[in-house]
Image (cartoon, rainbow, N blue to C red; front, side, top):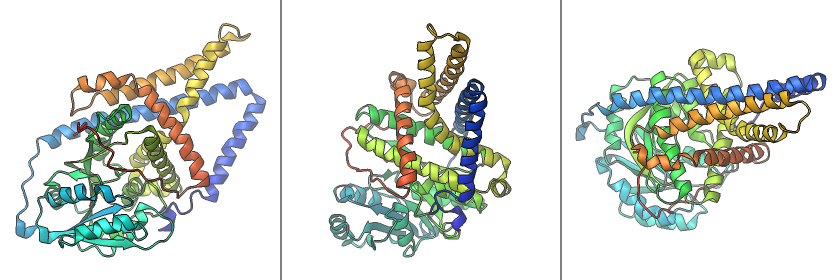
Length: 456
């Protein structure tokens, strides 16, 4: 399905459309610069506020969804009826965390003879290969060596390993993950009771090292909103849902039918969630939690967030290529939510610092400018967009349904700075999208210092 792959980052039709919009805006600017400037600021502000408002509504729907799930009871599956379950763990320079990972996987409450545990390792990563081979000697793990080829990405490695998978179901875990012991049983029960078009279940992710500094706390807060409110909201509306990077549980037949992961998309999880919807499948939430760690250093976080935003840009470009076809596949509501959720996240990150710049500049110019009404207009429009959007984002972030607000409130004031950092990562992502679209920046693991789960 080349039309649904990021191998071609942008099509000629999209390039033509972007050039046409830019040329039209430039021509209008030459004719009426002040009016066009006001229109642009208005459009930036409206897009920012509307995108944030959609997130607010999703959070409200998602909390209601969580309340429904919380009262649900899952009947444990009998040993004889459990299917073979494949667990793929893609690894790259992860030798240090492998012993902890092996303990977490062997703690899964699932029959050992029905677990297909596979370490997926790049063949030139000798240190990790040696560590994985040592763990595989007990017979519980299998090591899949991925031959060198481009692009050198996690989804490429997973696609290679998929040919060796034996399970009826499959889940992806990262090297630092610690899933709840009964997560696989819950997934089997949920798949059996769900409609046949349910191709994937996304477990919740929670951060274990929220006390490891400001970056880790903001990351944990971000995850709490994402997995406890926004994704459940998408689930409740039955619209396309971008997957998280780990704890994705798949029906093997649906995963193969969808073409598995796009090796050219650096957020293959988000892309696959949208592609499954395009092909008529459903993605839903699984009320089980996997604990993982947040980056503790700004440089590490910045690279990871840049990759995520670059992948969102790739995903938006891919799935916005044929809007009429998309509307036929996922419905008008699905298209609107996709544009507001995926496209809106990109738009908001890029626009946020521009609105701040316009607001601050015009406030500074107001006392001395010859045309104070125009300057005041710019300041008011940009200020309203910033105030409304930031207030909505803060209310979404602070109203976490699983944890007390007392833990989060001291960090609320830092959210504005955190979103500015996200904007900086977005501009870096845009630069990489143009010059290094398939470059994968690896996030190091095993940096946890303090254990304090947030969001689960």
